[in-house]
Length: 296
Image (cartoon, rainbow, N blue to C red; front, top):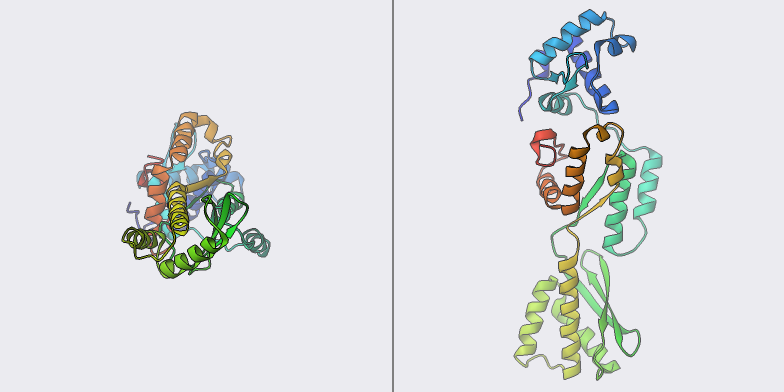
């Protein structure tokens, strides 16, 4: 979406345009000339302000949903505001401390993603969405420890420091020597490889009879790889928190659109596509209205 250059507007028009956009973003309601004049931030009469608003509307930057309802920014107007006028605020010291405290604790990647999504929602007052990275980390080490006679705790350590724990059913015939043998074998075959690469190499070697593993160890290795692959496939594409923030007083006036948006968030497909577009951008991306399918 292309917006007209800011230089085409007079300084007075820029200021009134900025106040209308900020007022609309704060309230979700159209902003009228009387409200602008009453704030004392524009040294013009309501009639003069109306003339400027009419000019901004003619340029396609503002629209009037009803004759006497005031003005609200169009998608083109919002794009101009975002690209040329909006100032991005840095987090406060308190906000930085809260972020570091909530995300600094060790734990599984899923919990970190949930905390990140909740933090985004808390800081923005909107719904927070985090997409799980699609890349597979390369493994550095695998260790197996018996929990009881029926279960094994498998710990996967990635080259990036990520740690994941999985519980595997223990074959009845497996002994302590089988666990140690399977751990050493998995670490040797998986180091520097992704889970998919390691699974393929291990399965091929076991099937060919070249693995030098006893039957119990081979069974344990196969169970472990199957469990990890299944868990990876089930991992959510996206985590959403703070959906209730979408239901503010302004949004309730268009409940059908809100319901449609919540349905999209539930299915996650449209949002995941949107976030993927943002991920490919070189810097921060802000999508406006019809620029994405969620709001068009």
